[in-house]
Length: 178
Image (tube, rainbow, N blue to C red; front, side, top):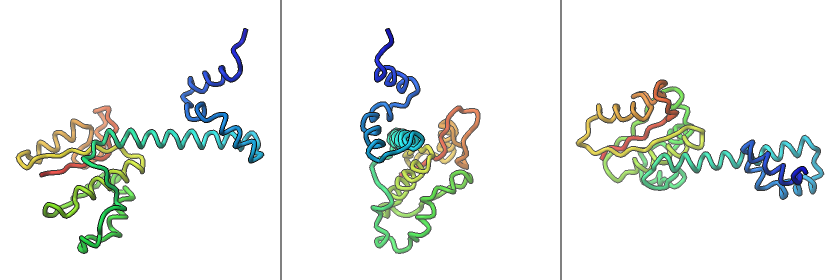
């Protein structure tokens, strides 16, 4: 005897790793019915919700793996307290176009001016743009050579381009020196 259709469908969605659709199926089908969607439109709705859920989970996991020292974003940065910092330039950096170009960003200044806040905020924006990020704090006693050796070990060359033979897909390394 064949299993009930809802059980088979749930099993198939699980096997296809479409857990977002599986977990919300009844509600999504009800929504599609209320909106009088065609089959194609219903499939689009289901796929959009699955993609949104996968994106949420990817961002959540990547933020955990980044090991930021605290939760900060760029919207919480007080640009008025740092008048020498150009908000337009920070917004440009937040677009993360510098990452695929293999460019580096250095945040320099005395303690307490917001360098770590900006670094974490830019790292978060990079994650939202689909890049992987790793935050690493180094003490002054460590040399820059040690820093770049560690970066290479983590899968990033000194220019922040992924190292092909490492098997790691890390694209952005945030280094903080105390």
